[in-house]
Length: 416
Image (cartoon, rainbow, N blue to C red; front, side, top):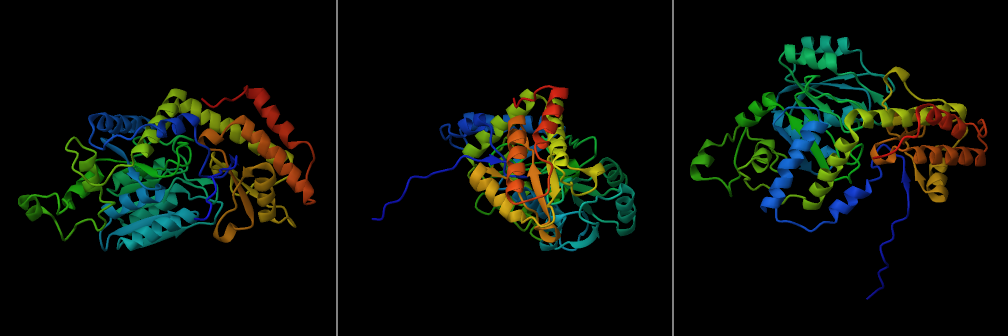
């Protein structure tokens, strides 16, 4: 038998827009013993996790639970459970992930109407509201913060308009929840999806969601019970014509699993739920507003350092996503070579982008546990050194000092 080497994981400082570094308390929680999914101790953790999620997502919705899978699984569960063949769906897209919402909606059979704006910009809410009145969709699906462009779309006016016009608003808040203010109820968001691998600082593998009674009404109209679990009477009541096409992502069945009936659906990802539970506890211990402020301060320090270095930021600054900073790659600099040297020689990872922005910008994430003063200063110092190595025309020795000046003015920022 060939020798198989020991698993070796190198030390990294992860400054991408996801995944991010995981709080050590979360990793410790995830190493706990496995419980059976119907063990009363485990179902108590399920219930407590729902309560913690309501607080973090700022909602009074009854339904708040994780989908087992990455954040894309949560998006797919929400959309395929709500959208039926021929439904009109309006998707305003200002980056890559508006395109993802479009593709998933189309696969669900929707008639998609797209609004597209230039990458680096967002929409005037009135443009979207006028399009809603014109198109009369069943659903408006949109991204709150798109990591591909580092922009954040204002949602409050859109949410209120959707409610007045009896349109469902479904929001991808994967990059914003727990890093900046996301007010599910106040903004009248009907369905919201996030992910563990960004500002929640839990490994990728769960997609917490929440939805209100307006969406639950649709789920009940499409509800079915799995054949292996249903009684003959229940089978006869199944609405096969409108049944949700996905079994795994059927929210009507998943909410039975997360309800006191505990109707079996799948084997819960035990260790992941431990991690989510602990990650949510950490967020609430820090306090939502204090956590948002930590993200704002570290973002401010990073931006100060980047600009002091002589680099230019990408995109409209008025709608910058606080958890992602996009930097124009200087002319004559190989962006991938810089990223490779940062990773191999400094152990720091930053990201490129997608589509029309690939090779044109770097994206630096300041999310969750990665969003700390030490990481900001290390990244700025290393980026300056690498750019000087490659002969870039930058201001020497100013980036870290500019960031330190921000921290000096606000006080040292700690991760809880």
